[in-house]
Image 1 (cartoon, each protein chain N blue to C red):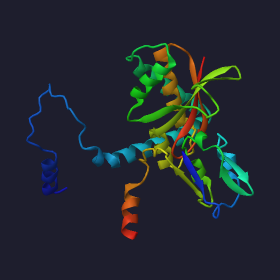
Image 2 (image 1 turned 90 degrees about the vertical axis):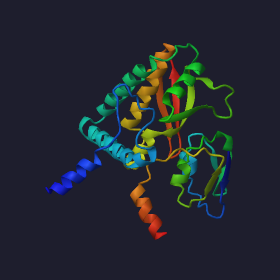
Image 3 (image 1 turned 135 degrees about the vertical axis):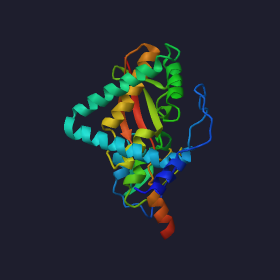
Image 4 (image 1 turned 30 degrees about the horizontal axis):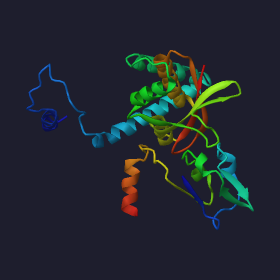
Length: 187
Length: 80
């Protein structure tokens, strides 16, 4: 390795910035546009991890990822205001997921209310629009609805349970390239 | 939501009818017709499976797309 190359490296990683220990960065560095390659790298890595997990653990992969997501949901939502009404909880949840996922409460035209009671179960339809999981799966050519989706399921269920104190379950009704329809079942 | 089916392009395969969970489409005289457009939640899976690319949706929220490979796009831009 030539001395010139080492000097060049040292030069690249040197700055005249004074950085004090109490300094808190106020914005991401570098700019998001420059992070595109990193984002793609992370998506590829996540896709490979999920694919390998599925190959080794089979159907057990879903249980692992669901559990991981649920723990994460409980962990994040415990700092949020506790509420008993589901509508308020969903509002809290959309704040919680902002930037990663966006969803809306949805109903078919023949239903009068968003909270639907059918065949002895109470549920709400949620349409997920922006979803980092969907992006990752499509980036890697993986099928939607598998273990990585279970992470999001767990996350939503964990957060709803933490906010409302009620047990919940999420089911996939339909997946698409632009949005996915999910059913939040309340117990 | 406005859904337009190009009647000349539609081959009447019925894939959109089978795929849509909200029964937005029906086959009428071997052509797909959007009979319940208000039930559409904009997933666009019908677009993905339509072999004739005969569908057009208006008023759909376009989800963020992070999965487009930047390098592939750069190469395509050079070619197109």
